[in-house]
Image (tube, rainbow, N blue to C red; front, side, top):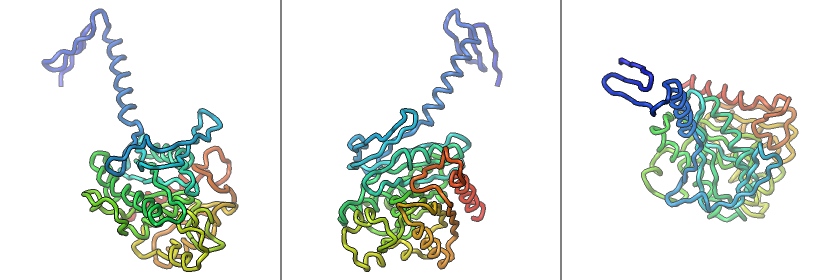
Length: 331
C-alpha cells in the first residue's frame, strides 16, 4: 500500500484524505490518534445487558455504601429486571468468560465489592467478565428461589449465545460465586439442566453447565450448625428440618459431572463457616472432580480481591488465574 504525506493531506493509493485548511499534518495525526484512543475506550466500555427479553436494569434499586468517592461500593437491594454487566478484556483476549455471582446474604447484591472490582482484575488478565444482578431468594418462596436459580442458568446460556461476537470460546465459560452467591454458583454446577419453568427460546437450548467453577468464602451447606442462617432462611424458610439440610446442601449434590472447582476461604471467617469449603472439597474429591482448595489463616469474610491487604489472601485471584489456565492446558 502506497502512502504519501503532504503538508495538508494524506494520500493512500489513489484516494486522498484532506485535512482542514491551515492544519498541519502533525496536528492532524495527533487528532487522529486521540480519536482512535477514544474509540478504543468506547468499544471496551462496560455494558449492561438484560438476560431475559424485555428486562430493564433501570428498575432495580441501588444503595451506595461508598466511604470514598474514588472507591465505589454500591449494592443492589431490589431486582425486578435481572441483567449482567459485561466487562471486556483490557489486554489480549484469552477467550475465556466468567459469570460473577456476588453475595450479600440475599439481602444485597454487592455490585462493586464482589462484582466489578473482581471483573476489573480479571479484565487485566484477558478475561471477559459478566457481573450478574439476579433476583434474590426471599422467605423460602419456591418462586423466588427458582427465579435466582434460573437467572444464573440463563446467564451462562446467554454468554454462550454471545460468544462469537465477543470472541469467547463456547467451552471456556465458567462461574465464580461469592458467599451466598456461591450457593447459586454451586447449584448450577451440580444441576445445570434443572427445569425451573422459565423462558423457552433458542438461548435456553444452549448448555448451562459451567466449564469451571470458583467458590469464594462460600455458603454451601444447609445443615444446622454449618450453614449461614440468613442464607438458608432466604432460600428455604425458617424450618430447621434436617431433611432440608440433607436434600439441599450442595456438597450432597456433587456428581462426576460437576465441573473442575476452585475454592478459597479464610479460616477466621465469622460469617460463613470454613466447614462449607471443607465439606465441598471432600465431596468433590470423592467424585474425583478436579478441585483446588486454599484456606488462608486470616482474611475474614468479604475480602473481595484482597487488594490493599499485606497477607497471603491477597494472592487468591492470581492463584485462581493460574489454576484456571492449568485447566485449559489439561484439556
